[in-house]
Image 1 (tube, helix red, strand yellow):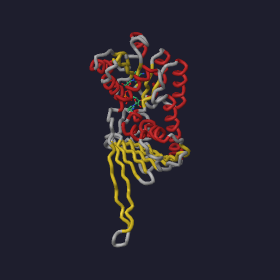
Image 2 (image 1 turned 180 degrees about the horizontal axis):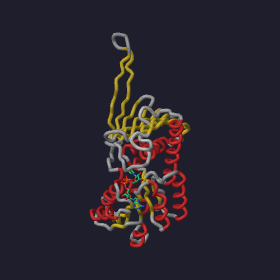
Image 3 (image 1 turned 90 degrees about the vertical axis):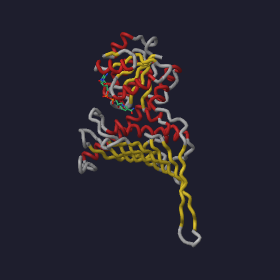
Image 4 (image 1 turned 180 degrees about the vertical axis):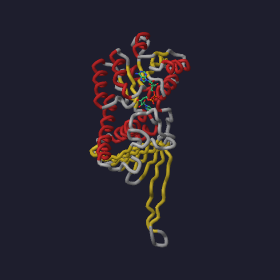
Length: 331
Ligand SMILES: NC(=O)c1ccc[n+]([C@@H]2O[C@H](COP(=O)([O-])OP(=O)(O)OC[C@H]3O[C@@H](n4cnc5c(N)ncnc54)[C@H](O)[C@@H]3O)[C@@H](O)[C@H]2O)c1
């Protein structure tokens, strides 16, 4: 199967590398407005470079030597680039966020439906073995979910931290709980850039589960921690190192001396059967979707919903900033 990648930057390079690991895939080409960048990446993987999607479509015939495209360009260009590919009949895997707004993402959904062209969104955490493990586990609904996603500041990223980082966790929460958000409280602050570099949200779900999310690019190194609190146990997950630790408390009752309670703790580290690289799993799922014509595991409707949640959190942060709440001492 012939798959091209549009955008040869940080994420696009990862896609080309991961696609090259799939036996059934040949990288049809790399497209980047910076042709030198596209050429350097294409040379490393034995494929062709193009300066635009038009050039790619002139050289490759959809359905014959171009079956799908990954769009890994800056978010503002997702709508025009993905539209052009869908209209040409090429299946699209668009990086997260699906588009610059929920309305734009909906537009992509309408297009892919009317052209009958498969479209998937790169919410990569859906393919994280930890998230898969949690989705398949027989846990009863958690009373609280806490996710912290921290990374270093990257000047080339212009999106705010809600759409850049927190969107992953908004999607994970929806995927794991299947419950709607009924209340949002949030604060955020621009610190190193013009947009929010730190955001904290407190959500209440219809199920009653509460959720705290912290996304920050003011850290020194990457951290991706997900904790689930249940009535009688606690689950700590590391999305980066792919580990799951379950802690179960045991009430001891009265001691032999007849006073006090003792509490012991059982800890078990769940064995993850599949520690595959999430990006490779995501791309395999995209290839399978093109082959089968089935609904992809992450649909454009999922991308729209994630962006709606982003917009809700942003609106609450906007109000907080306007009224001076949570902005000091650096904001
Ligand atoms: N899934 C994830 O975890 C994850 C991680 C990082 C980035 N992303 C997403 O990937 C996308 C790209 O981010 P990045 O960090 O790779 O950015 P980047 O700046 O490193 O790379 C973007 C590349 O696109 C090229 N480009 C810009 N406009 C173009 C156009 N019209 N046609 C062709 N090429 C064009 C640029 O020259 C650049 O090489 C963003 O939407 C971002 O949100 C997702």
